[in-house]
Amino acid sequence: MSRLALLVAPTVALGALLCACPGGRDSGGGAPATSTVSSTAAVPSPPTVPAASVLASATVAPVDEKIVPLFAGEALPTDGMGDGEVYGVELLFELRHRNVPSPPLHLGATVAAVTAAQNSAVGVLRITVGAGRFRTRFGPRAFAMDDGWELRADRRRGGAIVLFTHGGAPIYRVVPTGALRPLLAERRIDVVPLGPTHLASAADPPPHLGRPVTRVRVTTAWGSIELDQISAPTSSKPVSSKLDARSDADGEQQGLDGAGEALCRSLLELIAADRAASGPPCSIGLLPVRAEVSFTHGGGMSITATSLREGPIARADLAFPPAAAHTSPAALGEPKLPLASSETLFAMRSKGESASFDLVDKTPAPRIALIDGVPAYLVPSAGDARVTLRAGRYVIEWRTALGELVERALEIDVPGRATVSQWVPAPLSSASPIASARNGP
Image 1: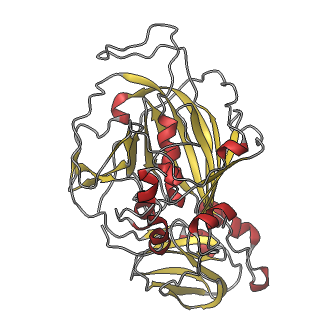
Image 2 (image 1 turned 90 degrees about the vertical axis):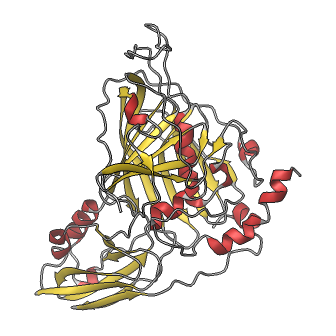
Image 3 (image 1 turned 120 degrees about the vertical axis):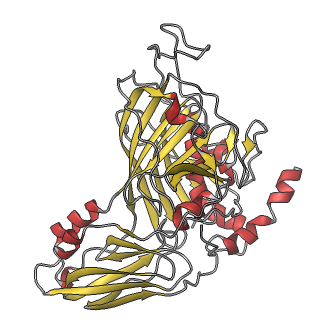
């Protein structure tokens, strides 16, 4: 066994204890606006995927020595991308919670109104990829992040940076590999152990966004991801660049320089897969367009690309970090976000007087309150919020921002209050985390 495997394997059992544990808290505002991406390139040929027997492996992936890890608190050198444009792709993703309670018709819920409220609570991500990098701009209701915050990563660096404003100035914090899940769920930068990963190829699904898709199922002790990827788009159209000596000649093919690999590695962090460091199914020739995340304890997220545009992208939009930004230990603050509009929540019942409903979180981490299956409010740790509903009885379910921890749904009267206390995890499905990874959640 390699030295790396000997070092990593003992951390798996510890990871099983730490994956749901709360940590300390780390305020910010928006980040620079995105550029416009235009034009369309030819649809690439379907990607090739190794056979299931090759993918099926529960060993720790070898770390790519070319990937240099980032460390918390690290100050990064000034980015040298310069001005001009590069070829890239912009994807718009929607985030939806999986396995939510159905509208309680026996309590008077109106299906059409509940559906409208669920659609109003969909999270939004705008992801730009190119030149070996990706930028995620968080829109409304995206995890526990503020609208306008950004996450940027470079294929050659392990980890990412979170970019926001503090005191009117753009600043960034380094997010090492293994710390992305706590950041998205709780706004804390705290590395958790990565665990062994089992990969299995699946039958190719129908095309997505008009592109052929390859599907792989990624499983760890924490959950699984059904990952759909397309061939990384390329273009033969020239892209202008005034200061870039490597500017492509007319007609020369241009690609994403492996930017899809960095995006893939970030998605695998949601289930603490060791492949978030390197290795299949992430590849420089592939680009993720869909991730169905299912966690061991019943919840999950659907992260699906709804549009894809190709064309020139300003180099500044992929700067790592932006020239004006500087590193800072500034706290990220507690999230307290309404996820659905008060009008849509009030319309879920056709009868009843207006009444107040209090949501109280007594846990050390933010929690999302689902009302009749609608993500209504992200309540901060040890905090509270108040929503207005029609008087009556509702189905209330609490879960974490990623959905990896889900409480039992209860019927609660309004006016009144719903309180969530410290979650007690169930034991793993196996005494061996590796066996759990092989067997699935």
